[in-house]
Image 1 (cartoon, rainbow, N blue to C red):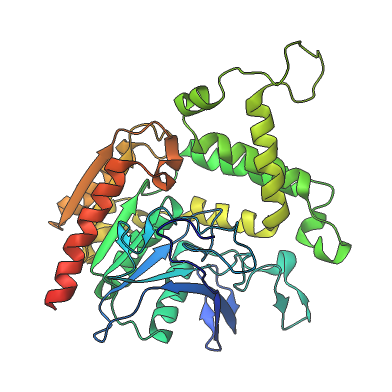
Image 2: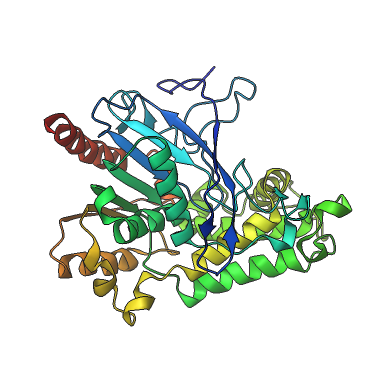
Length: 380
């Protein structure tokens, strides 16, 4: 059974595009497909659409469940659905798996029409700007000229920001949650260690492991463990696991003894079964490359000068990966341009993953913001 208040059973859809897309790297995809899901009903004026952009490990499956996989609940199901903060009784919600993904959209595991084999290492590196361009084409395909809002957390929030820069007339509200205007050196370092874990796995084969019938699971497992540690706060890990051991006696070996070790290995095993290593490499690079201020000499205010959207920026006190100070940078740049911006800093203990949690204050904030958007939509 779907969770209470869920949108229920949903179906993934596939949109194919034959118009070539030029990527920031200089590469080109002559044709590509995007996996997406929609929830709610697009109104007659086509003015109530909300795009939800996914972060590193997620996909287009934002809410609801699949009939043949009822345990696979959408990654933001606690926030999106009938009567929830993003109410699908009022809004038409769109989730999309980005180019380079591994959940149905064209990516490294797809067939390269030029060779008849899987792309593998030949699939180009993609950027947030590339994703926004592809998403805008999906919006046109769906008959959406302008989104009532575009929202996301973490890497998804970076896409919401980029939309306001690249497609300013097509977004009314940009909701930026647990984000940064660019990665710090420390964050880039974490991503590089994760990539090294994958690329040095003997089963990686230079990215062409598909033809070898293997998967670089060891590297993927380590990459996931590294990432997962950075998503949680020290307090959250201490509260959930502490130094609790699985057994009473010390083993004096290197098997699992502490509960946190067991948890990390479990999460890593699950991830390695469902995620593609080549996709992981490309998404972390997209994170590293995101820096809208680079074209403006490092001035974020100049980069956001073209934006027309109203903004909600949200941070979490325990998020040490994208700390509130990084959100302050975004808010300052928006205020420098005299743009409408609301800012909230939520005192939550969960770390970076707080944007995925069902914190009452956080959800009340999102609900109130979408209540205001709903009134705007009704008045238009």
